[in-house]
Every structure is written in C-alpha cells, then in structure tokens.
Length: 247
Image (cartoon, rainbow, N blue to C red; front, side):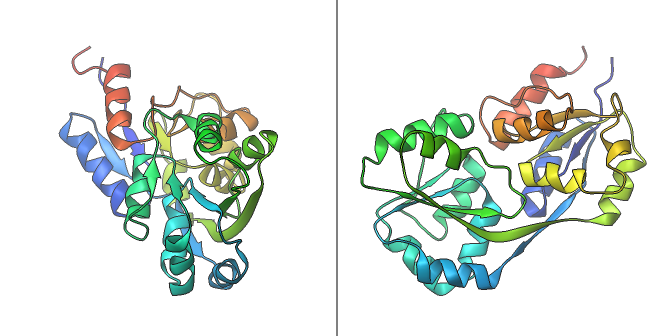
C-alpha cells in the first residue's frame, strides 16, 4: 500500500527543510505554508516597558520568539530575566539565538507537562511572562494559574492565512496534513472554505503537539495522535511508524 502524500504547513525555512527531510525518507512531501505570522511592533514595545522584572519568560512558538527578537529593549529584558523556557526543540533553537541561557525540558508533551515542570523549577514568588499570538488557543496560562501561579500574557504577533495556500489545499484530497499550531487551526477555521477543508475524510490531520490536537478536537476534527514530542525528528519517526515503507 503506497504511503499517502504529506503536506507540511509550517512556514519558513523550517517547513521547507522538514518537507525535504521527509522526501529523503521516501515520502511524497510538499511544503505548503498556510499561515504567515506578523509581529505586532507596538505590542512588543509595550511588553518591553511593562513586563515585570524577576519573572521567568516562557515560549511555545518560534513566531513569538521572532517577534521579540526584532525589538532591542525586549531582547535586553528577556536576557536579564532569571530564566527563559521553551516548549519544543524548534522553539528552543530560535530562543537560544536571543537568550542563550534558555532551557528546554526533555520528554515534555503539551501544556500540562510543561506547566508542571515550570512550577517545579520556578518556586514562588516567581511568575511567568508569556508572549503569544493573537489567535493562539493556549492551555499553558490556564494550567499555570490552576497551580496558583501568576502569568502575564502579551500578544506579540498575529496569524494570517495565506489565500493562495488555502486555495491549493482545497484542490487536494487524501493527504496527511501536518498542522503546527493552534493559531494555524484557528486561521483555517476563519477561512470561507473551512467546511470543505475540514470535511470528514478529505484529509488525514496530524497535529504537531498536544495543544494543536486540542484545537482540532474543539472544532470536531478527527486527527491522528501527535508525535511523542514536538520536534521534527520525532515527527518523522512517528510518520515512519504510521506508514512504514513497503507495507
């Protein structure tokens, strides 16, 4: 039985590299970046001026890191923070370029695990500064607040669906669509062709992480289980397990 095609929706060079790596492993993979992230410069400026000193910074997306990286005062405040943490290897690599002291916990899957490790590692009165996207459906702040911890959320980027990519997706069927963020799910849900794109049986949906899986479930979209951890390497192994070559 032939392997299904894989549509990689992650934007930028990271998405293109993943599609190339999948092709090298025998998949028919296409890079189709569905969304574009747009930094909100004024919001980042406000974060730099208003974020509390002495709190740890937490990131769940590379887009949030890129938004901060474009503002000198925000970067300086991030570097002066007692700690900075990232969920996922890709987000951590981006964060290390602006905050070399940053940490990524191994073996963490999703917001609940991430929040647990943050609470264990950062005792009170330490709070958390969480730069995020406007459309992001994040569980992390809720998990931290349930643990009695203080969280400052700062919207630092917006997510825009690229119409040409959505049009190409509506012309396809039967592929595995790998979706990388809750904001990407929300952007698709806001498109006029959402009912066609999310039609049952049209695609096989594969969320990159647990929070993205949750966003799909909230829309009633059936999906595969995400990889054991949110990294390209784990995703490739997961796809090879689901669709072994020559099976």
